[in-house]
Amino acid sequence: MKSLAFQGIAVIAHILVDVPISTATEFGCKDTLISDKWREAVLNFHNNNRRRIAEGNQVSEPGKVMPFAKDMNQLYWDCNIEYNAYLINCEPTKAGLPQDYGKISANINLGGKCTDPEGTTRTVLQNLWNEVKLKDLSANPAIDPATQENFGIMANGPTTGFACTYNKKCSNNLVCLYNKEPSTNNQANVLYETVADAADICNGCDCVNHLCTQNPYKLADDTYPLSLCSNPQQSDDGMTNEMQATAEDMVNYYRRLVGSGWAPDKNGYALPAKKMIAVGYDCDTADIGTKTKTLAATCQAPYAPTAGYSVSYYEERNLTKTRLEVLREGIKRWAEQSKLVDLGETVTFTGDIETTAPDFAEMVDEQVTRVVCSVTDDDCLKQGFRVAVCQYNNPITSGDTVYTTGKTCSACPTGLKCDNDIGGGLCDVPR
Image 1: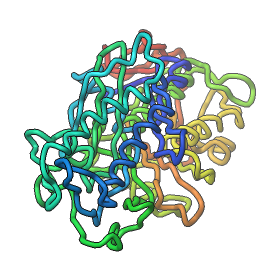
Image 2: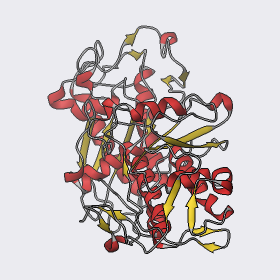
Image 3: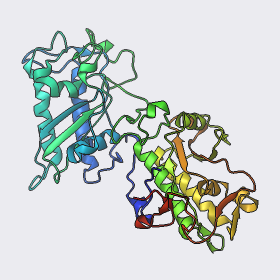
Image 4: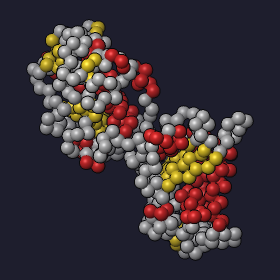
């Protein structure tokens, strides 16, 4: 059994947030050592220069201006791409370059007496951008990848998402990743489709200041760290690695509270469970991720569970919350239903537990070994909400035992032992 069990309440505070692109200075990325002021400066550098190309004002070989661009995309800062870049820069064994992505890297000194990290970074980026002057691109924006690779990656028309990172403690490099590499374009290394007339700039797309916009831009889902499931294409739940790990960890955290006797109920704390199993994320059941994603996208309560599963759902009408935040809030609210009931010595799916705390019961059902979740992006926006749906691989029904009270871990199934080294309360595979 795969388990990424929570190692205490403090872990919740350290789960890092995955959020959509900000429209101004609040990007919401994981790395709090990098300022949003720096991110905005890097983003503006790219889009200002890409706009210069689109408007036909970018000089290539001295005196030779590049042609107007029909389809030059505006770039969006992508926090998932930034984290991938961070891993490449600081923990390279944990990440690689996603397929068809472009990467630029250059030495940068932002330590010591550096008082203007934004200006220093712009200078480094400008040096890379200046590769544009090494070839005449006035007739055809086809770069020479041997001498203009960095410029080509930064200026590639089809690219929509990117991010850069630096970390003074682990590297002296600026690293930027882009979700499209020029060599993968329809015409390899041709940066964009040209037009002869300025009136045709952005022709055929939603255009703002001569750049094509994405409405909305969707965060990359192909970045490292990869899905917990080794072949997510077989069953796509639409979740990032962080969202999957959060679902597994939070469910195990609340199951651990039950197992160790620290789950709150109406009269204080519930009796401990003697055979509460650590759950793993469900990657093995055929199509269950896809089915869960499809279920969420119906946007219609009560979200009937897949056969062989129980289901919980949470609809969030605050559309400023990210998908990860919606998932966390849903799991937290389901768990807090325990405070509304007296769990007692015999915990069965009857009475108040069935009517008032059904989601809590499903989450801590001692027969459950796997969980799978999905959170909508824009599927339910017309209905005014995002929805988180989680399914558990046991269809609990009226009268069933939710869990058996007794000494913690005293009846762990064969092959499992109490996970005392990471908090206790759960029966898990020995580590």
